[in-house]
Picture 1 (spheres, rainbow, N blue to C red):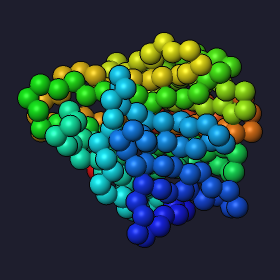
Picture 2: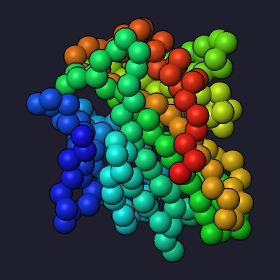
Picture 3: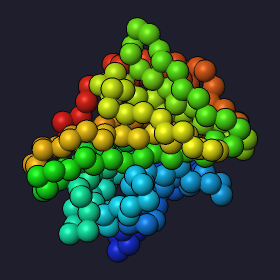
Picture 4: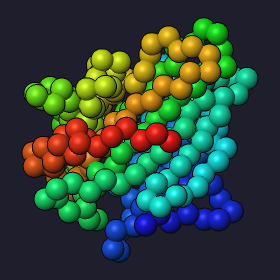
Length: 219
């Protein structure tokens, strides 16, 4: 279940047994980040820009909803829905978890190319690979103390791609021209294993299958 403070937005945690997975989501220069030990897996604005500031946070069932409306200083606003996803044959616990990140961007500008980057520490190596026949692509980030991977379905692969960075797996989302008033979505799935330096193959396979069978949420 999600743990939140009623009078404090920007901090939430998913609890599994006696363990928690903490998310800091204030936006701006603090970005949106999942804490993994002393490291962070972060959703950031591209090219060193600041994100809009978090304006609204609420929990609906197993979903954490976060809203970052556009301001005069930003080219776009976005919403983020974080949902733990069950995987066939893989049990989430205090060491391993799979999260769906539903990102929706929108702009009031006539000329905008919004981009967001998912940044994963990868001191032990970063790589990506395609999977047939699903059309999915997996971006691995091996970090010594823990492993992580991002899985993109075929609908997101064409408009996303890895940015070469030392000691990081940096995945850029969106980037194409966005018309005023149009909402564009991406749905990366994140797997984290904080007991191992790399995510197990069975978790990757289960996530690819589950993502392929999961319809894109309407909200």
